[in-house]
Length: 405
Image (cartoon, rainbow, N blue to C red; front, top):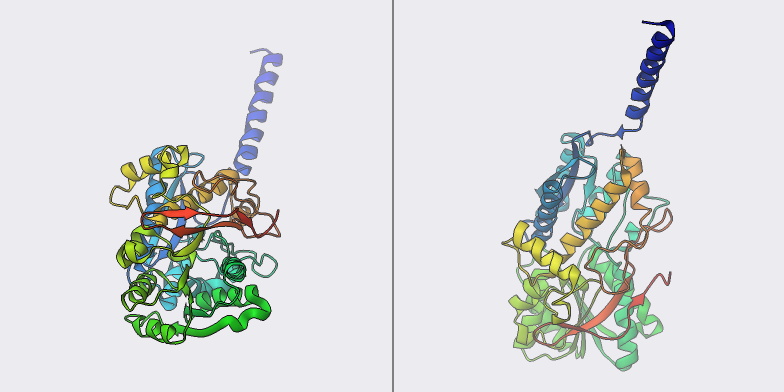
């Protein structure tokens, strides 16, 4: 071999040797990530008083199976570890510690419930593990300065009830308002938004009645609200109790104008058990497409969702908004992980989650997109009011953007 050729081979070998560590250095992993896998932890109430929400976790798991069947994310399969916490904060703490310390997940995703997420809030931030896209609209999840490892997803509760308050003031300025709310951070957050929205008219609230998640029914609370003389009913409840409240109000002949919080507006999981005929006229809000609305029958995003459901979650209801929700938020996480590329550190997960620009889940209402920034951890801040006509939700008015971006 000539000296010139030998030098050429040596140079090429050296260049290749230097290039390999450089290429490897581009891949950055924290616990839960590797060349082949991304571990994602989750807790969900598959049992207990909020078990109607369990279908959200099943829809998310189904979507991740779809992603894996299609090759995963940048060649990595999602290992979704979803545990049943029964909507019990102590169990949530126990299970999240297991996910972080034993299963070593890269992130915890979509833990459901304000009390449950509150119980792990400080722990997740102390551990510097993403508590990402929590399944609760409490206002406190948008606090990047003090809790940089926690981010919400859906519109916040206070914004929602401020919108209801504005509508009440505009349409029923002399209303007598009765409120049923869950006696925890979730219910109190909603109640605060309502009072803030009413402002100096908060005296319009003539009765505030709470319930505990351990209560078998809310029948006695509904009778108490009827006795208060309230002609507007603001129903701040999770699905089981929402269905009970709607049914009981109808059965005892109480006919107030009803406002139902968004987290319980599912036709399949709430209004059908309550009785569709007993739910007519209820007002709520939404930011996603309702699968029972014929307006979306030929919508590309809805058709894609239905095809997904039939293939990957055939036992799931095609009338349940919770399945739309689970699909939409799972798509959002996949977008974040795609943006991470080969830098699958927990820090970069949060960085990319805070860098979503006009992301379309395919199931948001027209004009509603997901946007975040390092100082804005509230991905969705727009809703539209709607009322139930006995078959489906009918939207009215304009899309209201709380952020006015």
